[in-house]
Length: 395
Ligand SMILES: [Zn+2]
Figure 1 (tube, rainbow, N blue to C red):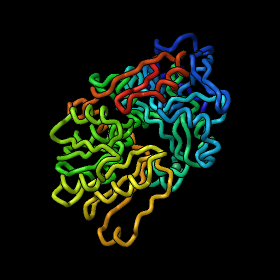
Figure 2 (tube, rainbow, N blue to C red):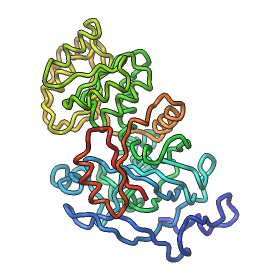
Figure 3 (cartoon, rainbow, N blue to C red):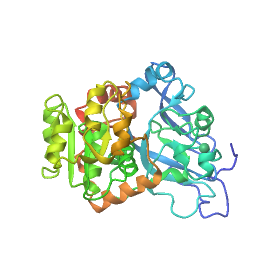
Figure 4 (tube, helix red, strand yellow):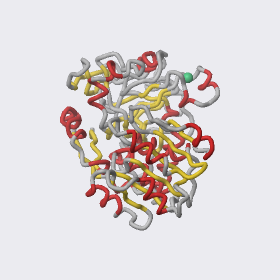
């Protein structure tokens, strides 16, 4: 870790100390909710505010999303997914943070300055593996989410470089991870960018284009609702939307009653409804967003709703094996693509769409908690009313 500190450097464009940091340079403390043991509750601790390194920024967090899966991650993850490492404890969690840039490192150049409103894409990459050197950082062999979990054996080193998350008053992140937010996007809305971005990237990976049709499986959920509003923003002609809760489906339908076709799971086969609604062709794209316990028959049914040459993207937590017949897959040239996250560039696209008014972020109902109420927030997110509810910690 470099000892260089943007706070005390001289001669650069960012040389002056910034007034938002409390205390002097030697005793800069912040409050952060940290997990001390697997399965435990979060405790509020005083921890050091990091000294900014040359290519990093310090962000004063204003809002942090509470991920519906968080309790599982901090309770069962090491046992369920030992290949997805958690940070060493005690650790600050909080995947989706939005706030204000309060310091910039000496090598942070144009585009980012103190006072900017930003979302912090928490995806960290090593910078030197084959994928990173190819400029494909999201496929880094050690890709790691700040304040959540990692995907490779090198995650621990990345956590040590960036041991921060949205449940702290400040966090340090690489400047390249920032998504700038226009005034029209609230911090609470931006705290939803992780789920929105995952849905957006899935649509892009399916090469979804204006005028096309899409089936969102699990459309009333946290990920699914994002996929619906992004498909509408991207010019979908028809969005078939499955869900179990009829009330939530109605609410979803009301967002755009002409383009959204609600499908109640457990009644008629999804593929039949889709074929009827597409003159027997099927949809161009399927975005699979169902939860871990969804029956695989539902997934196969949705896959059968794809047209010839159609693309399915799996961003779901479905954990059972999906019995897909390879021969018709070849004959019909269908694709099944896996995806789990998005790039800062895709985040910038979403911010621009929201600012232009094509992406409607007003659908979310924010349930706001203070940092001290973090454990209550985690309980609240488990009892949420579908994807419309957005549980947020506000600093
Ligand atoms: Zn890498």
